Length: 464
Image (cartoon, rainbow, N blue to C red; front, side, top):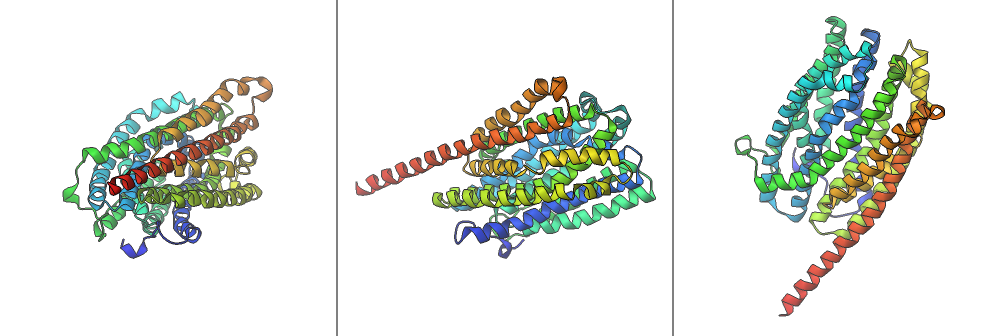
């Protein structure tokens, strides 16, 4: 936890620091997905016939419910970065001691909603009857551990804003290994099927939350957490919500379009759902690698914005876009090239599901770098303190376009296919990225002009 693990984002060459800051985030995300993949692999090999589809069918709806509150953790990270960059240590302490109780309250709300409404949401998505029972069990147990997940997300956002990306990697790795061990015990030894992997996830999330809280408590700087001092400070909460709520709404609305797409996938039957679920897990690795550059751009921009080092922001933007383009192009094509072998790990006895999974990988993973470009641009804009613009662009360019596509083009008989469904992703990413790029230049110019006006006013006052 110590300060020697932190990266100085406001001084020195950017390329090297961005790369070394991002690598632990990538490893953290990839490890998390590996542990999630272990859930699917274990139930796929040792669970019932429809276990993989049952777990996979919950992903979109879980993201829809959770993303609104995950956005608040983004707000916590950005406000901490701004305060650290500006040297406001007292403000940093108040934000941190507001963030953790906010995470706990968010988790309690999510638990109630998830446990009570899982079955309703799954029926609303037209989840196949063979899957809905197992999916409901999985979701209810999963949401029993969601408070720990919220605490980990808020805590790791604070650590990353402070420049520490290695800590969350270590804590998640420890919890993930524990998760895999529990998966094997609950599913193979106790024959608990999807309930076993859900319980293992909930327990391991609690371990990761405890480790993050302990790390914050052991820090020696302004980011140190003292449990006795936790309280919700009104001004700090308002700033967190101002940045985080639009991010959360954006994530939730983004998930709504994915829920509608998942419902469309469900209409093709269990075999397609199984293939789609396995492919989603594989493409998740590519997305996680790209999204790591989004988190880096967000925190680097936030800290330099707080320090009013605006020239570095444009360089952060250029470097991050170049890196995410290279990463998305490389790993997206690798995922498709090795797609058949990877899918067979999840679906060893279902060649039809593998074939359907390959269709998704072709249309999603190969052009996935466009999504990465969109996310990095969003991160830079949000790091500058503007959260409404990317939300509106995402709602219209991504969610709106996909929903419009599904209820118009997809309903035409000749276009009613998986290929047509997946094309909507590519179009929506492209539209949103171009709009985000325009928004970035407008907002950046506005901030620079405002800064110049302040300096000019200060110079005039100094002369007087």
